[in-house]
Structures are given as structure tokens and as C-alpha cells.
Length: 59
Image (cartoon, rainbow, N blue to C red):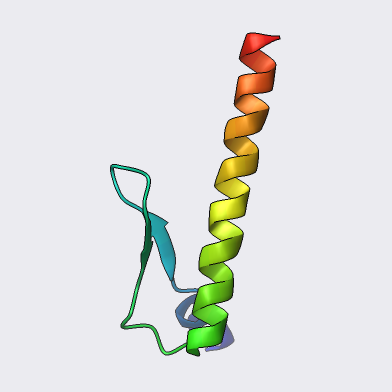
């Protein structure tokens, strides 16, 4: 039973569309502040990963 609760709590709130824009799942039961934080974290992580790829391939 606890596993099912954890899976529901770990829903995908932030994703990226084909153009690379951040898409927020507004049907989530999380607070707006937490959803905004997740969106910012996802954006910064993607930006960091893109920079790492550029550094790796273009050095």
C-alpha cells in the first residue's frame, strides 16, 4: 500500500515539449509554489546538461 502512495506522490509535474519549452501539469495536487520550484529546477538542470554536452563535444 505504501508503494502505491509513493508512486502517486511521484507524479510528473514538469516536462518539456518538442520546442524545449517547460510544460507544467496543472492537474497536479501540489502547491503552486512547489510546481514553480520544480519547473525552475528542471530548466536549470536542462541548461546545465546542454552546457556539459557542448563542453564535451566542442573541446
